[in-house]
Length: 260
Image (cartoon, rainbow, N blue to C red; front, side, top):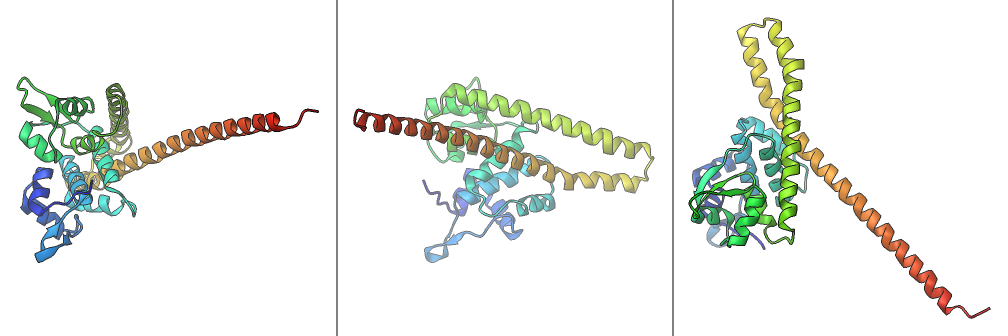
């Protein structure tokens, strides 16, 4: 379903202020809205998911300049779903920072009313967690938008639970290994060389350039690997279907052939 939001609705869905939306627009981080009647600006799914990705990258400590470089590296034709996947994966390999929100706020961010079953599905994906108060939830702002998109997809609940466990386990292991690699091969030798204080600050600033590259590399590698895996499965399925069709055609031909 097409998303069509005013700037106030966009800000409410994303959990930010209108001033923040306008600020990102002036910085070129958000594309301009589509102007409608009476010059009212309308925002769509791309704006919502791009805004969510910007907020998630900021939560991970990236500067606006680093976020701008990250967004500039996104390939042409990046869809809103691609942006939602970027945000979810970036959130999954860094420490989670859940936010408490009431049902009304959660539904406002989701852009829809949520049934008990839908809340269970969002919980299975790690997008939110129930609390002692049935009307209050701990929300993962990085996963909620993607979780809402998947709500209507007929995927079994146990599959969602298992899929989230796989992503979280491997993404955290990757993050730990990358941190260890950088610490032991770059940072430690650098500190042992007794650099000047100014040099230390420059090295710390360098991490602002490295982190968005690493994050984007992880997401891109995941998407490429997933496409390859799905492509192989589809190819195998097509081969099996073609083989079955050929076998059926041969059998039909034998049945139609006159007896010798």
